[in-house]
Image 1 (cartoon, rainbow, N blue to C red):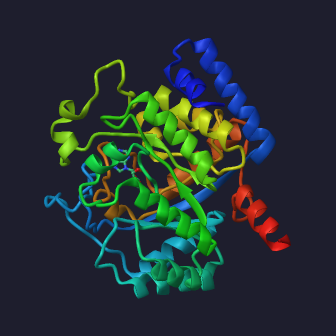
Image 2 (image 1 turned 45 degrees about the vertical axis):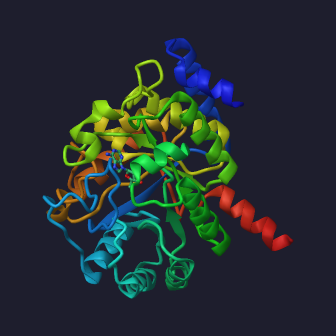
Length: 353
Ligand code: 5AD
C-alpha cells in the first residue's frame, strides 16, 4: 500500500468501503497473530514529569496536579496481581521524570522478575543508552516510546523541550532495538495540526521502523494544557485536519495491521474512553490483538490524567468484564508472555547469522 492509497483510506467515508478495510485487517490479523488477545497489566507508577508536552495533562507546567510516586513494594504488588489474573506482562509507565532514581526502577524490575517471571515493559520516556542497558540487565524486556507524529514541525510545536525534533525519537527507538528490547511506538490520532498526509507518513513510518508494538489512540483534550486552553489556535482548516474520532481510530488500527501484519497492536484506553460500551470489541475486530488493563491502585488513578474523562474501573471488575467481552466475540485471552512475532522472527534470524 502506498502513501496515496493510505490517504484515500483515511479520507474514506463510505461505510461499505470502510467495512471492507476492517474486514481486510481482521483477516490479516487472524492469519498472522491468531485469535489470542494478550493482556498486559498497566501500572502507572508515577506522574512526575520533567517535560512540557503541550497536549498532555501530566506535563511539568501543570502545577495544579498533585504528584505521586509508588513505592517499590507497591509496584511489585501490582505485578503479583497481574500474575494472579493470568496476564503475561506488566507495563511500568510514568512521566519522563529526570529525577527518577534509575536504581530504584532497576530494583523494582529485578524484584518483579524474581517473584513473578512476567515480561516487563517500560514506558518512561527518553533516557541515555547506559540507563536503557541498566534496566535491561535488571530484566526489562520491552520498551514503549511513541513518536507522537512524524511531522517534524508539528513534533517541535508539541514538544517545546525537544531540541532535535522527531529524529531524536527515532534515534532512541533505534538504540532500544539495537540493545535487544522489543520496541513499541505510535502516534496520537487527530492531534490539532495533524493533516491526512502526515498521518499517512506516520503509518509508513511504523513499517519502516519495523515495530514490534504499535500503540495509537485518539487525541483527547485536557483543560490544563496549552492545547486544551486554546484548541482552535492549533487546528488546521476542516478539510485538512484529521478528526480525533472513533471512526478515524479504527481506520488507523486497520491500516497499521495491514502494513505491519505481525506487530502487537493494542486496543487502547483512549479509544475505550470514546466508546466505553463496545470500543474494545470493535478495535479487536479491525486489527487489534492486545488490551492493557489498568491495574494501578485506585488511590493514584485520578492523578494520572493524561487527558479528560479517561476510563477508570477497579481492576478486578475490569478483568472479569473484559474476559467476558473477549469470549463474546469468540476470541480468547493470550497464554504466555505474548512476545511480538516480528521480534521472535528477527532474533531468530540474527541467531542463524
Ligand atoms: N490524548 C490522548 N493521548 C495522550 N497521550 C498523552 N496525552 C494525551 C492526550 N491528551 C498519550 C501519548 C503518550 C501516551 C502515554 O499517552 O501518546 O505517549
